[in-house]
Amino acid sequence: MESLLDEIRLNTEQNRPVDDSASIAVEPSVGNDRPSPNNLPEGFCEASDSEDDEGWITEDNLSKALKKMGAVEVEEGVTVGCLTTDFALQNVLLSMHLGLVSLNGYRIKKLKSFVLRCRACFKTTPIMTKEFCPACGNKMLHKCAVSVNEDGEQVLHINWQRLANKRGLKHSLPAPKGGKHAITEKLFEDQRMPQNRMAKLRADPFADSPFELHDVTSRSAMLGIRTMNNRQKQRRNPNEARAGGRRK
Image (cartoon, rainbow, N blue to C red; front, side, top):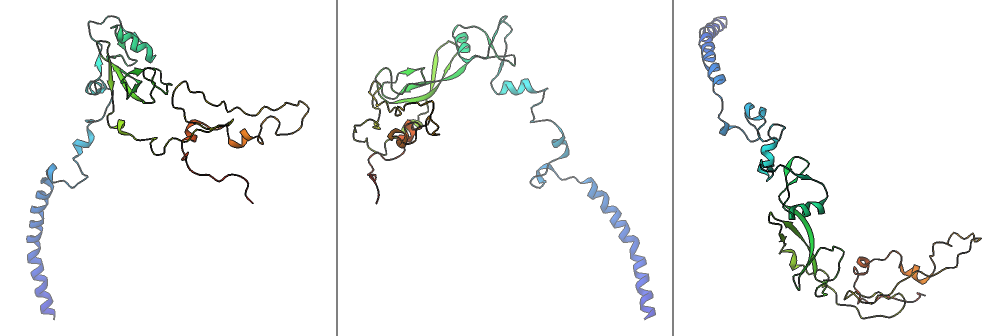
């Protein structure tokens, strides 16, 4: 056994320098060989790419980034520029062909606002509170963006996909109903609508009732006339049969 152990020790001592030289020869090759950027694993990048500021907007490249996004610097020939944050006044200045400058020092050449356009007669109105077209009287107004070009002309930006909306056509029109608190659909602008006033109550300065100022027992209060608006009226089916009267 001792002779066998001595032979094994001699063999290991003879082979040890060969392994060290091989390891020394391999280690420099591993350190010098850098993987190419194309062979890097997903999610990893070189140190030089992560340290630079390319792709980030800083104070140095702010002007270049604004130029790519469409911002234009003030021209040299423009000696006077008007600066205002009023949107209506900006449209007036552009229509007068005056130099309009933003707060950042860049020239504004076009603006975008909104108008109402009629789907029936194709007329437009700047009054955004209109429900019916002032030209033809139809309830076909829709909101669309409008901008002013360099020549002072209005350009409409119409969303043609939104015109195919069938909202409001699910239920048929309800039959007309009478009464003091009738809920009727408004079909034209000068249609007479029920006033739907709250019930008048006699104010008693010496009354101690907590329900004196806020009516909760009259018919108008029970119907919710005070808090009812047009959108709440149109949510339910007007032709649906509803249970009425007292339940036993």
